[in-house]
Length: 312
Picture: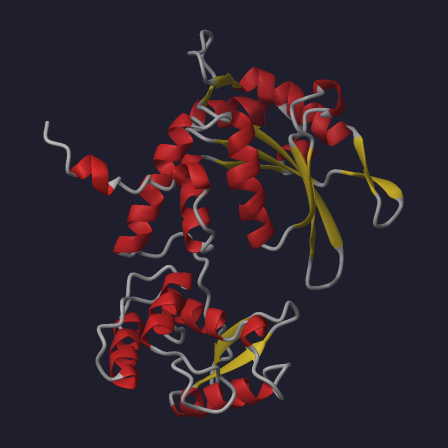
């Protein structure tokens, strides 16, 4: 990553620091020998806990995914095959190898077991920077509108998770929604396409008779889910109308156990199997481990130097 080997652009001290900023890491080069300092930082990342024995730590993998981005290709190595072979030299000595997947994202697998290292496991331990990011995102969820939840959080997150043709119904014309805030599709490894509808609520979803302001009652969700699963959507890429295969119910707050059970009892067995829930914790964890930049409204404002000098 410092660029002293074939296939990689040269990076001075300033650009090494900028590179780690792009990786969402708080590393600032101190002016010492570049290769030694960088090796120490990578050693710190490599020492972090892993979910499985034959895999690499998430933040370590993400550094190399940023490093191998096609936009950083050097002249004569536009497909980054030279850079990939250079990277695989030391990796293979440790029993791993890097490769490009179908989306041209670099992946890492253990040579003997063929296990691919994952960075997006939402149940892995979080690191201090990820804990800070999660806290700032939680504060944003407390104050954002329902439209901001959809546009600034859910749409970027589902795109990063591999869903495509993501279409937001918006809230300008409720008659066009048919119970869906978003529809999208996901292509399975077998190339079969699965369609998803998503209904989002900003606050808590409960089953109480009297619902607090800002929360949603599950009876309202029931009506929207029935509409979502019963109405067709038009997919312009295949030029035909299709039914939604699965429905996501997403809440910026808690989805109570009572609400989940009430909805399950109201739906027949076939439709019950089509419903998936995603509450506040799911959103926070998935957003953080997917390495998505925080929305502009979630980033704390930088204190003004002039204000700091004003005596109170």
